Amino acid sequence: MKNLCVIGLGYIGLPTAAMFAHHGWNVHGVDVNPRVVDMINRGGIHIEEVGLQEMVEQAVEKGKLKASPNTVEADCFIIAVPTPHTSDNKANLDYVVQATQSVLKKVKKGNMVIVESTIPPRTINDVVAPLFEETGWVVGQDIYLAHCPERVLPGRILIELIENNRIIGGINEASTEKAAKVYATFVKGDLLKTSALSAEMSKLMENTYRDVNIALANELVKISERLCVDALEVIQLANHHPRVNLHQPGPGVGGHCLAVDPYFIIEKAPEESKLISDARVINNSMPDFVIEQVGKLTESRNSKVAILGLTYKGNIDDVRESPAMEIVGKLLDQGYDLGVYDPHIKQEQVEFKLSSFADAVAEAECILVLTDHNEFKDLDEDAILKGSKQPIILDTKNCVVIKSNQIKYVNFGNLTTNSTYSRV
Ligand code: SAJ
Image 1 (cartoon, rainbow, N blue to C red):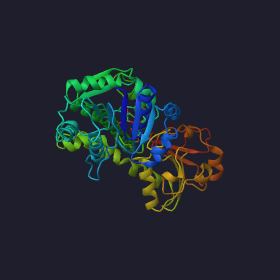
Image 2: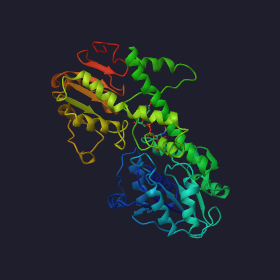
Image 3: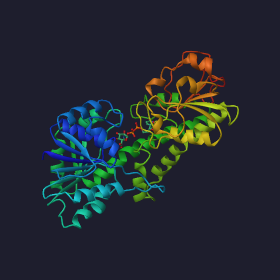
Image 4: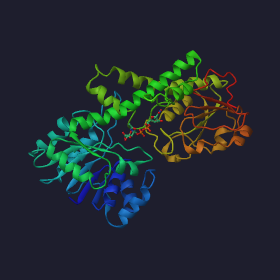
């Protein structure tokens, strides 16, 4: 196997395609977006990820990576298209089905087909395999089929593609063995061989585990506000216990993974997913909780609020399912005047106006930190003291380090415990 076709060149597909090309495969990338195809064929990238630009540039230069809108013949096909959720929180498998149908037109006996997209339990057995069987292929014999979910953390993708253990979930053993050979190309972590169903469920549980633990931390913040206790200190103290790992509270859970994947389980087992469902409700309630706190710190709904950070987490450029975007939308709907600053975001990614830091904090009654970018650790305090109407920072990500005692600092640890809201 030397020819690989990767369908979907987004946050997972493009780094994966580049990694295989870097390890000697002839890679053909497929994407419906002509701008993306064109940019890659010129050795460029359309997403922010450490080290990716260099790897794509090299692979294209060496002729190991090409991109087009059409699926081509190959020895192995990797499907890495999005699986968004519908308005009623069901998995939308349209892109997976379309990608599979495009593979069907090119597949040959002996080929390997791998789905990396995150999918609900039984999707490989009940949705993907039947598409091949309907056209006469014996799946697991004529062609091989597996689910090998990605587990990489945005910001560390190229490192984790190699270091992370990789789950190899074949529709049968022959498919598992063949898929394992594909990833053995560069994976240094363990290749964990299992069934497609266990692979599907394991992937979903990894993100659900994190989502439920974040919900516990967010619930603690609400309890702490009622009981006037420092939630952040409590988390710090409790995490000194050898078997406790409380996660960090925040303005909500964003991204295409933690905020979506639990629904893929709930959809298949609604009665049995009480805790998972409640956790989603708690995390989805945090944007309103943050807006309540803004209301306590500002004179009226016409007040100016400075927004620092729009992405769903720090040091990336991804605003998908971002709690910050939801908070901005709701504050604008309520009539607040906003100054929005995010050094990782381009104006064309959002519909509202982006400002410089100084313009964002000018005349602000509250400076609302919604994302933990490194740039926010050390803020321009002079600009805040000179420009803002009230030098008050509400840090929902507990990431800002304040030096001046003229600035009132609020985070999820001192919402009620410190009436002066100062942190000197
Ligand atoms: N968050 C908190 N508190 C925490 C940790 C995270 O509020 O203690 C928030 C973040 O701010 C963000 C959201 O949760 O809004 C998700 O961020 P994340 O860093 O937890 O994860 P993702 O979505 O960037 O990546 C996750 C990872 N999954 C796990 O760590 C179990 C990654 O390994 C997966 O590959 C990725 O989902 C995916 O694609 O599924």
